[in-house]
Amino acid sequence: MSLVSEEFPDLVPYRAEEITIPADVTPERVPTHIVDYSEAEQTDEQLFQEISKVTSHWIPLITENTDKDSRVPLILVGNKSDLVEHSSMETVLPIMNQYSEIETCVECSAKNLKNISELFYYAQKAVLHPTGPLYCPEKKDMKPLCVKALARIFKVSDLDNDGILNDNELNFFQRTCFNTPLEHQALEDVKNVVRKNLIDGVHDNGLTLKGFLFLHMLFIQRGRHETTWTVLRRFGYDDDLELNQDYLFPPLKVPPDCTTELNYNAYLFLQSVFDKHDKDRDCALSPEELEDLFDVFPYMPWGADVNNTVCTNERGWITYQGYLSQWTLTTYLDVQRCLEYLGYLGYSIIAEQESQADGITVTRDKKIDLQKKQTQRSVFRCNVFGEVGSGKSGFLQAFLGRNLSRQKTIKEEHRSYYAISTTYVYGQEKYLLLHEVFPDFDYLSDSDLACDVVCLVYDASNPYSFEYCAKVFKQYFMDSKTPCMMIAAKSDLPEVKQMYGCSPLEFCRRHKMPPPQSFTCNTAGDPSREIYTKLTTMAMYPHARLRCMCTCNRCTFCLCQNFLNSELLQTVRAKFYAVMLRRHVSQADRKSATFWLRASVGATVFAVLGVAMYRVLLKSR
Image 1: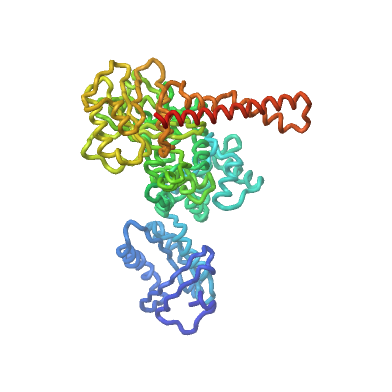
Image 2: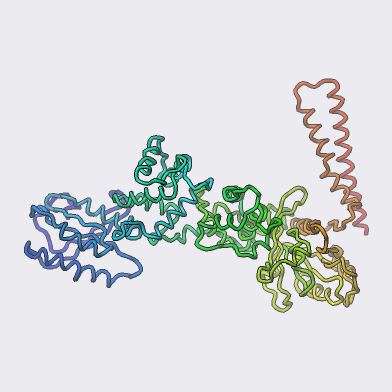
């Protein structure tokens, strides 16, 4: 009542009515609800009996009626301090040491308004910034969970991964957590405090992990728990020092027939993470470097199968391209898992975004892409069907540049049913995701059928291998708009006649599919990637009926495409623009410009006529 009226009431009831302190008048900006409880009036002689009741009655009463998993902080309050000349703190200290849930003890006087508003500030602070999860008073040290959380925060904030926080990193950390940078002198003062108390707390004029932890223990011991809690909560931790679910899994709506991809900002962030852990600068992550990268995770997210899902170097280490490919795969297949992983790495903090969801692009409905006959997507899925032993696994591994001899070194338990890498379609870099579907014809799920392009693989040396591909196509894809390609695998072996009603070539003609594509990974060098470019092209342009699927490079379509992408035409264009854009043009330059203009126009006319002739010939066929 003194708190509300700011004066001592003459008539005090045994129990005050419930009071709510609004948020806008409290330092922490949170509303506080006060509920009073009363027993009979006490006398001064009953003081020690009342104190003993704290341990025998009140604390057991509270702990027995609250959830054991959620610790409720307590504050001991000594009222009527104006009536005594001595303090009862010495009597209360043993109780505080015995019960860790007691945050603090304060003596106050409602009559003199002494420590009244402070009391409720301490109550708010006890809830918002509790000491219990951070500090163990018996050991006079921070608790293991607190140390673990702060160590992760240090590693995320160490942008160059050199084991120290330099001035720039400390300023970024300060601005991130407290919205204000530190002055140069303030930074030096902080480091000097650490130097005086810790030998290895400062190194190369930067703060080490030990120095970082020492500073927070100093804050806690001096009663500034709010400083440490502000840092912890900014980096996503809850009251139990676990990463908050709202932080790890921000809301992200993905409508049906839409896919998820990483956007430009997310790729930039992931590139910086790779760079800071690739210490030997070999554009690959060794097992030790990969372990260091995932040190901020509560578990190792990538297993041995990842090395057989993406590109690796000759030592089997994940390359830079393979690293980005695996992140692309995770985003496409399980975006919630990707959000969680980005949260562990501190994406929203380092990239200064609202949440990890800001790093994800949700593509538009695939039906709209088909209607507009264009797409902005960067990741395309190809489901690979085929009987056991048809060569599906070899087809996936060949996409990653592994020939048959390298594939034989893969252990069965480390086998992957996915392969992802980049391809280039008309100069654009795209990701092609290959998924080997388990060959159970009667139990193909919706996820087995949902893709951008279908790859039907049969063993050209096995007379009974093609029949499975034909059945899958007729049952599931004949009436679908999903483009399909037939692959004649193991083409290095003698080809045999397929025991089916018609040949694979005739089957493809009847169903308006490209002719079967010969493929082998039994080569001395890296397998050809041309077939994967064709699959990506089919996935990007499923509406295009006129597709050149040959490998001759001699037909009109191939010649025109090669010419359009040739260095000669690019040189012509560059020379033309360079000459035309110059301010002072000589007579010789004018002649040169005329020549290049004619050459450019002639090349363009030739290309257009070539494509037109090709389409006319193909249409008549």
